[in-house]
Amino acid sequence: MGIRFDFVLLRNQQLNLMEENSNGTNKATGIIIVILVVIVILGGAWYWFSYKPEQEAKEKARQEQLAKAAAKKKREEAAALKKTKYDQLITNADKEFEQEYWETAKSSYAEASSLFPKEQYPKDQLVLVNQKLDEIAVQTNSAGTVETLSSATGRFYVVVSSSIDGDLAMDYGNKMAEEGNSVKIIEPYGSIKFYRVSLGDYDNWDNAIAASTSFSSIDGDAVWVLEY
Image 1: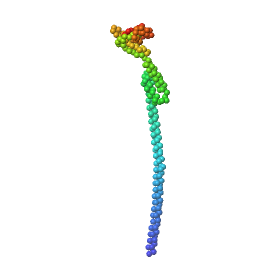
Image 2 (image 1 turned 90 degrees about the vertical axis):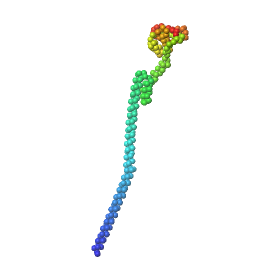
Image 3 (image 1 turned 120 degrees about the vertical axis):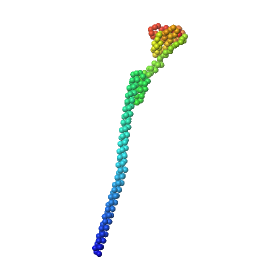
Image 4 (image 1 turned 30 degrees about the vertical axis):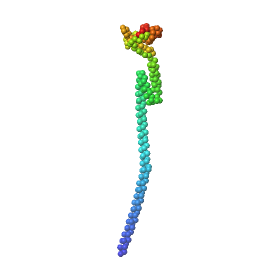
């Protein structure tokens, strides 16, 4: 009976000890779980509020640097193309200037100047080209005319040249017109085989004779008056 009681008591003590150990284990496990949860929460907070924003900021900065580098390269390429185009325009304009193609030279210099407004050379060349164009305009405005007569008019002409060659007569006429004269070329008629170059026509003989003294012959012959 005494042995039985001791066994039961021992058994109860073991059960109590096991229960205490179990409670201790559960408590330790709970603490570990709490610690793990805290670690996870802190890790998540660090990731979302520190690491991730930092990485995003770094990536944004990297992308901005790449964009700046790309933009700089693009500007450099555009500047190089612009300079190449400018140099080609100047080369073309200089050739056109030498060949006296004033209008095309003016266009090329103007376009080159628009690319680099601070460059003085195309501006100086434009001044020269415009001077040439103004000179041509003055010459054009002051130039005379050449008129060919193929039928009689009844007027009196001061003849300064007579030629059997129509082209030669026209050359004489153009030359005199460039000097501002009003030229009339009388074509051959009847038995006359010559082209006559006249620098003045009048309504009567006396006026024509009086005016003839102010003209000089082109080919060395005497100036004379022709009624035609």
